[in-house]
Amino acid sequence: MLRPVAKNEAMTKLPWAQLRLPPFPQVAMRVLQLANNENVQLHQLCDLISSDPAFASEVLTVANSVLYSPRYPSSSILQAIAVLGANTLQGMCITVGVRAYMGKSMNFPAMRDLWRHNLACALIAERVAGAGSLDKDTAYTAGILHDIGRVALAVIQPKEYSELLGKHKGSAESILEGERQLFGWDHGETGRRLIGDWKLPGDFEAVVSEHHEAIGGSGWGMCEVVKVSCRMADSLGFPAFRECEKGDFETLLEELPERERIRLRIERGTLAAEIAEAIHAIEAV
Image (cartoon, rainbow, N blue to C red):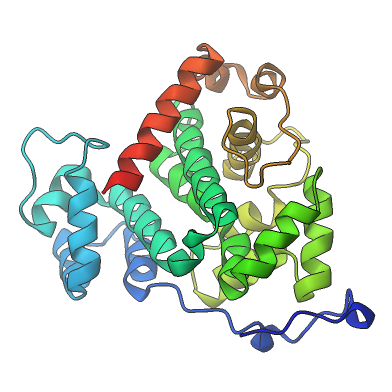
């Protein structure tokens, strides 16, 4: 277990190896790597997932949940993959992987809030990207991974991290500052390093390290989708920490390009209820 950084060591960055970050489920990482390969065969994904019976069982349960509502329930991983497709499968596996990664730290209320925030961000990103030219399944995966650095730090010291979230109320920058004092690394830096160490697609590096930065410039890509989706998750009642700045949903909506905005131009309460229902479906399996 990593020791907290003493006061006189505040802001001193510890060597990366000393963070002792737990390993992410290898099956989930390999699924994400393979699913991003256009030449991957379904039987390769099937063989990979089936190699871990516990992981395979949870993936199959999620595939048969009300979240996906298949016409005919799948009785095998191969059937599930064939129905859902490789892209949807990658998001599902990363969701299962993140939940497994959080493990016992989910016993802390602050960690459960973080889990639901990640899910809400992913579900909103999926909708936003689905209205434009970006792949909605990749957007969902990016949303799940955007706070993976925060998840990792929380897994190392759940009690201390929960206390940090309660102590540093207000802006995201206040939380980042608290993380640097406790660990020497903030969650954006941690996430970027993790994506590199796990050899996940490089596009996710910008998502995890820049999602707290202001939206600017003329470009509109996956990073921008997740930036807005993260803030929208807060404004809809799924904050990463309870005392964060929520932001105004309508103002955030105006930051979207017109075609993406149309997709979310529904009553705020209706969207929040739909997101809550989807989160409940994922948590229930």
